[in-house]
Length: 355
Image (cartoon, rainbow, N blue to C red):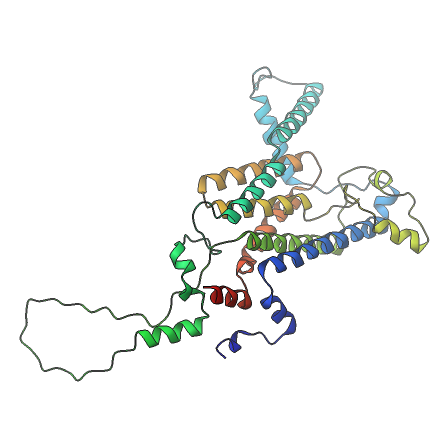
């Protein structure tokens, strides 16, 4: 059997290879839900066992990134008419300036609404892939030709395509060396057919993009959960625990465990490195820009994402390192999951039988 070499020996890998992209996307949805439930429970565990956060308000860590962003914001607001960049200000003026900076940034963030803009762009990307709108593009990011993808020859497994190529274009036999001839002015060229087939590539699909996005998000959330569990960093929010969790924590185990399984969208009372907001928005931005394939759009999207992250760090909701690592780790995971958009061997065989 020409397909026997492509069948994995591991049962789980064989099950994954035989599944279609839609089935894999459904399984990845369950993985995202499981990672979020696991993260929600460990948020409570860390908050309930961090004694400095329960008994008081620990001193936040020094955030140099936030200081730099605050200085930049003050400089921009001071340059606006009405403040006079060269005048000497009192402490009250500086406090008013800081309040105006925070209010202006909050209005800017609400006006941009980057999160829902990314959600709308991601939904539009899925619709375009399902309706096959725009250019043909494979999972490697290259432009494709429709004939190149849908011709039955390119849906065959690689070994069968090589046998087909060698049977239709046999290798030329070695001919005896001809006798030297006098030079002539006639130039003849012979092009021999290649022996290796062109690598198999297929256009991107809705199921493939959804699968890759879900795998990236679930992996990023798992890394986030392990990160804030291994090392507990103090929260920037004063008196956080009494506002979010029962104080003091329950002593009996059933009630203690029950709190961990209750949905909690406000986060814990320790720094949650990496930022969950950054993992979600970075995944949406990666999916949107990879489907669009437009440099101008990509720069605009990532500029808006950077502004949104800077404002969140300025508001004190996260340390600046949380936003930075959330974006970098998610983008690296997006690159690592590139092969998830390719269909399995069984799905390729079905396409070959249909054609």
